[in-house]
Length: 300
Image (cartoon, rainbow, N blue to C red; front, side, top):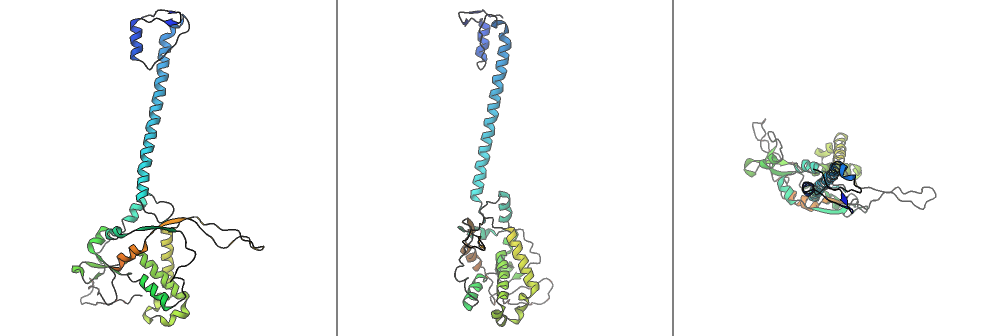
């Protein structure tokens, strides 16, 4: 239907046109001459399309912003619950993979602490020269190298125990276990002793000399290399200028970064409760032996 022309700047609409505008309130059009009434349907269609397109774009933008907000909220919540051993938080996937290798009973005991990335001043007693006092500290550090673990605990971390060494006690279902960190510390101790061989040669039992020979030390160096590459310290270090006419930069580096570390006492305390002490346990007979051949290892 047609519409009445505009009179005195006011457009008079037929009833059908008025109802059409009410049903499409988002659409607007204007007229500034008597001839505008003939082009009104085209203008109405064009304005409706432009308005709908603008609203559609706004709706999509709002949805994308809401999605990003939800994603970031979930990611931040995951990162806050994920302990890290470096200033850069690990991805959620990597945390899960590492966490699956930790015994559930140990996981419950572990605590974390924030500390400087590097303590330049070596604390006591690790700053001592080779001596009985220093050796006592290392012996305590390595005391729980061998620990007692149950079959169900090994199953929980998917460790194959078909031929794993068993120890007495625990109803016949206890095994010899070694946490990786104590293996690393054992190797570091072997290198330390070799560096002060003048002091330790006469103090090393003959049946332990092999551990200080090049083949074993080469194994130790590569074990520590692998451990460092697996859990790298990603803190940034810098060097300072020095007032020296020959060399104007320092050979030292420093970092003011703090890192999140395992509280050593929480791990060491858990391991000590399970320590297999020399003379306090025996190996069970292996599958290839017909008679018991129990031994008491004399580990350092």
